[in-house]
Image 1 (cartoon, rainbow, N blue to C red):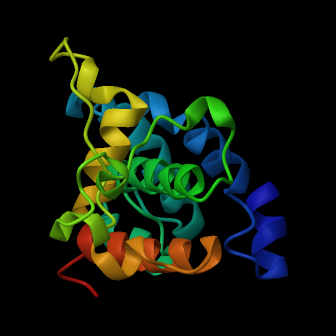
Image 2 (tube, rainbow, N blue to C red):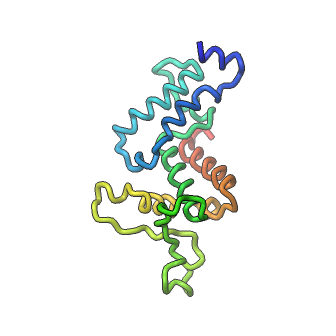
Image 3 (tube, helix red, strand yellow):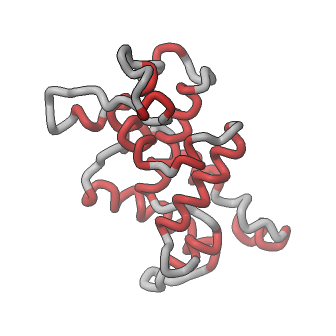
Length: 176
C-alpha cells in the first residue's frame, strides 16, 4: 500500500530513503568487513531496489542499481569514508577526527616533489586484523587511491559529485 502511494505520485526515489539512511548509518564500522558479512547488508539494498522495480528475487539487480545510481555496499562505505576524509582535511569535521596528515606537511619535505602532492601519510598500525580498519588508516589509503582531480575539488559538493561519478563507474564498468 505504501509503495503504491509512492508509485502513484511518481517518486521512485522517495520510498527507500529510510532504508538507505539506516544502511548508511555507521558506515565507518563497515570498512574492511568480510564479504560474507557484507552480503547480509547488500541483500537489504537489493531488496529495496527489487521493491522499487517490482523485480522477482532471482532477477538480476545490477541494472536496477545502476539505473537508480545507487552504489554497491563497498562503494557506499568508500564514499562515506572519502567524504569524511575531505571534511577532515578542509576543517569541516569534528576536531577528534583530525588525525590525518598530509605528506607535504611532514618536516623535511619542502624541496621534494611530494611537497606539492595531495597524498596522506598512512599511519603505522600494530594489529593486522583490525588496525587497517581504523579511520586514519582506511581514510589515508582510500584518499591516496583517488585521482588527483577528485582530491583537489574546490568544494564539498563538487567533491561528492566527482567521487560518486568515479565510484559508479568503478562499480558498474560494463554498464556505464
